[in-house]
Image (spheres, rainbow, N blue to C red):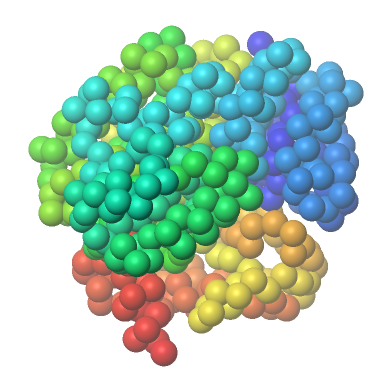
Length: 449
């Protein structure tokens, strides 16, 4: 059993991991940058180490500094959370080579399933459909490229093989736009992921974004924790998530859930993971697998009662944990609203000092956040401030409970997306569950203008 875990992250997920460690009686080490000296998690961690300047490359992405901090504090394991180095297979491998347990999948699993092209070739062996496209090396000859794109059919979408979060992603409506879009997407992918490789997919115009949460013990045992619907997105960034996904073909979903579990068993998947799909016309199309904890994991925890972060720790550190599908039950409906330090209309980041705030509470309401009254939100990192999660016996009741929670909640001193959520939760298309991943940008925001 490990006795000390270094948490290689910041903000909300660092605090979430710290709390899970404390519940399990595990000592913690928190790292922080010079711009994060006032993080709440530092007050509760057993130890803390400053690993560099405020910018991410010099701190939270600085592998030698993180490993040195782990060595200095005699940590046994490293918890990556989400973002930063969480899906970096080279970092996971370096942790192992340096004598630290990486709390997540084996580095070879991250490498295979984290690369979208490799992952697609693997999942198709389990009868899982993928979006039609072209994943080989993109030819330089214009005529050959035209043949490929015409066979797929416009519109198409260009994606980075090593990417996510909308980086290196471009929608192309016609052949005239293709050459320029390829150059832009490749440069953006190289800048963000150190890998400029691009692949082509058919652009499915009005799908929903459905996720399947899985957990494996690395020894051939795995379970699923049901589904999430993450279709409220802006620029491929999720803003509202819920569990379970409703109004889907249950027969096809049951088949898909079994396929995902079998896949995880066969590859000896270790820890938490998410398989993401587009859903349109009663068909599921595999997008990618995230080999880490998701920001939206609380909605799954709420409807299942299964603590995913504690499971990650238990699996990695050899603590007792039984993965039994028959003991997993979905009860009720949960919704999560991400509150970001952005204005509610143009979504422009708005860091600064929080002068006054009040958090919501009550039955069926969960609040995950690292902020507090007087905290200064730094301009260097992701703008997410808090996650408000509600659980109720139905989707309508969960929405009503969320509106009540948002009425209680306020932050002063900076602009947030608070009002956006209040407007979306009374929108008829959203409340009737008729929205797609394009609804927010193509209809909701335009209607607001």
